Length: 343
Image (cartoon, rainbow, N blue to C red; front, side, top):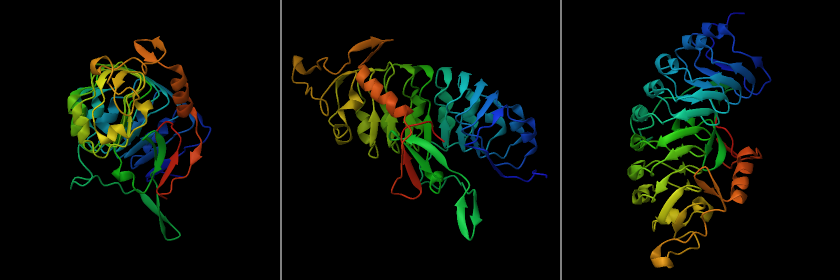
């Protein structure tokens, strides 16, 4: 049986092993490739480069290794979703990915990546475009089943500390997740040009320096997680411009000073700021002691790798990441699960 006109291939949630067959390169009209939750291993075969019309590459939760192929940025120019999370990819994030101007969801979490975040991320123009713009991306992969439209695309995204399954509103979602790697260096200021981005997760890395002063330019952000890094300095006042922000995790870094008097921050759980040298609401230290300087009550009980950690809260966080208890969201197009790899 010939499949050369196939447009969507979903082999997810199986127990397939071995490497991806080279014959997949013959599917030149393929737009959607889902291989998540299997046991595929080896390199991401170069034969996939022949599938130039791909909109989605989802190989999450496998055992792929090697470096992230640079050809993805050159040959898959229409790509909107790239999920390589929870594999064994290593090396640097290739700058060639910055050529994916249609990319809306980029998940490289839970791998063995190192090096810096490329400054060319500013070229991810779909993420720099707000959803109310005339440049909104067109994402229309669906079929009809007994007269009802059934979306062929869905994605599990870690947003606001929960896994949410998006399908019918997937085209409105813009997210970057580089968490659980060994990425170092500073957060490049170019990231702040991504004004359409809704979720940014850089947690559990080796990032240094300060939070970019212009983070407030990212006006669409709803969720930020910079926890468990080696960032320092103060929380930028520009964060007050993030009117949609409802999830923020800045715990276990080296931040100092007073938490800005901003409603979005003061209404958060105090655990979002644990493991720093901060004071002010929602923390119990109100900055009235030591001449307005924070005391060290909330900085954690252990010192590891330059980050002070209270292992009670870390164990809670890790348990939350590992757990996969499913909770159905009230919105029929969005199902909510516990934290986990995206897509």
